[in-house]
Length: 223
Length: 284
Image 1: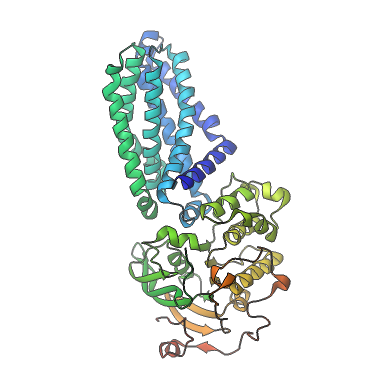
Image 2 (image 1 turned 90 degrees about the vertical axis):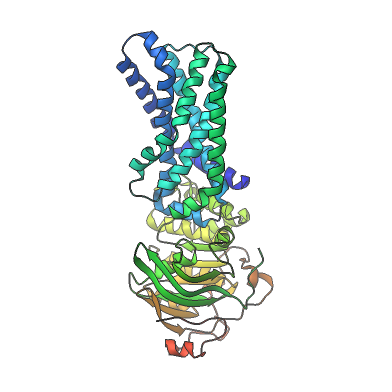
């Protein structure tokens, strides 16, 4: 399983390194979204700083949809999805490999968006480790759910429009928990202020990793 | 995994029905293909040839009936079966952003194959030098086909499912394909070739079955199959060196096994037991 996961993650990351879709298209899209949110909120820096946590995670969610769609489309061209099914890769390894590749892209995107939030919204981070932990846990949750629902929609002609409809409601707990942890981190809160939300993220990640490992093979065959 | 015993069929379909929605892709196929046998699947467009191969590859589930591949149920032993079966389909299964060599390497490693076979396979199909480092997106249709064939021959699975293998290939590549199929057949690989160009593939096959309307409607012997010896490369299905065989030898060539004429066998003959052991049958 781990060998297959490494193989698939390496393949997807190599493709991303060649095409640079995440860096040249998804990241700029996220920055544009943050800028538009700033325009909508108006020039008041205090208002923007207050809204920064939620807007950061909304931008991350939008970028996640694009990253997952890219991950799915890579397998859609020229029957690559059938090729992957026929290769005899362990489904759990395939799921973990694709999740790792999406997650690696999300880490980069979140770093870019975090810088954007600080520069555009004047956000001040008081407890950096809470930001790092929430992003790490959020990345896992978004990557595994994205991979799972990407596979679910991959065989459909309407996958581009269906994926956000399926995925965004499912990842609402990540948005909620991530926003609360960021608020605590920006107001200098204690670890206990964000602990319940961190636990929620851990639980969310554990559930979807387990579901993906167990069900990805069936989903891949039936989608 | 141990090779299947030659006494077991490599592929066995019994009453196989496959559906796409409510449309029948296969409408009750009985077919057995012996280990090491090369079977040409003929039929007009839409007859069910591609569906038959996709069912054998485990890509399309059966609605009813049974299927075993190398003695295994492709649903229960999905991963094990797929690592031992290779499908050359209309699509090349290549990643556009990976180079030719990277695509072949991924295909071989994913199937647990030997990476040492990658370079000989590239050489066999003329995918060397700058072409090997070219992203797949820049390849012509024929070059993509060669790359897909390179993946197959580098993997060297025990069952080859070739869907219109000559399509899109130039004369030289067709000759290379025929050599590869002949070499695989001589090495004991089981091969199903779906084609609506029988002339291009008949010389390669031991037997031809005709598919019409999702059923096997005729079965004729083209030339006797060589017995599969349960030792050496004949059973592990490995190529000697991954290079083209000398002189493009056809299966059976030099063994007095040229294709006999007039060996068409109607279904009734097969059902009455006239067919050779280890093969047979079909349902109209």
